[in-house]
Amino acid sequence: MATATLNLDVKAAGAIKSIKNVENALGSVDRAGDKTKKRLGKGGIFSGIGGAAKRAGSFLKGPGGLIMGLTSLVGVGAGLSGLKNKLDVADALAKSARQANLTVESLSAMQYAANQMGVANDAFTETVAKANRRLGDFANRGSGAAKNALEQLGITQDDLNTKLITGEDRFNAVLQALVGIEDPAQRAKSAFDIGGKSLEVMVMQMGNSTAGFEKLKTEAAEVGAVIGTKFAESSERVNDKMDKLGKTFGAIGISIAEKLLPRLEPLLDKVLANAPAIVDKIMVGFD
Image 1 (cartoon, rainbow, N blue to C red):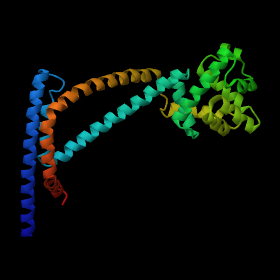
Image 2: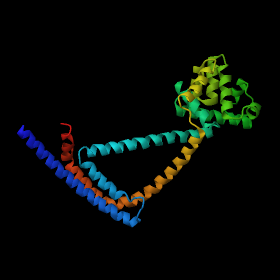
Image 3: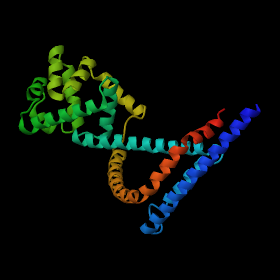
Image 4: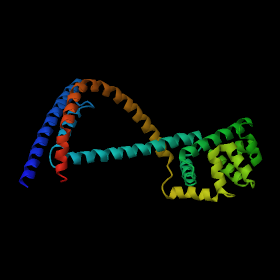
């Protein structure tokens, strides 16, 4: 028991010494950050570089400091990542809805319904965009890839310019006409000619009624899967600004990195050299 205690004390002492070495190295980065901050001007956006180095040192000291610090960073990172994912989804929906002549609410509800029928969001978005282009060609010129299929469905060029104006009205009219075709082979071909493979898959699953599809669209609103136009358009603007900001910070960051690299490389060497002792120190708490 005495030998085990002695070994543990020796390991702990070595780990503490190693941590002290890393802390001293972090101090060098701290001082380099302060010099950089002065060059950028007091209160600049990178004024926290020195503080970050000090906090990194504190993570390595004290009971549970490193673990608690990492846990906090992971939590913040996950939260920001989740927010960015939501913004990206809403941003993409806004752009896709505009391309398909649909409202964001309609597209997100239809995406949900299609997804429940085995059609992925991206595939469905491509389908409605393709169908909208082909319907537009027929409406504007009376021709196009979907001309024969639409005429067989009884949808005329005049219908698309008078009664069926919005993307949602046109898509719903096409679905209603497609499920009314009794011959499965002809139904599949007409669906493919208008919207591609994904529309064919959906129509063949619907059978002779769109009731199931409409029920799923209603369900989308009930489960909170419908995204509003206001939020989607705001996400577009925020994403655009974040991209611009990222490029601006990236350019500044490169300049700062050039000044800090001479300090960071020795720091990394010290961390790597003392890594085994630091790990031993952390693992003592789990023994």
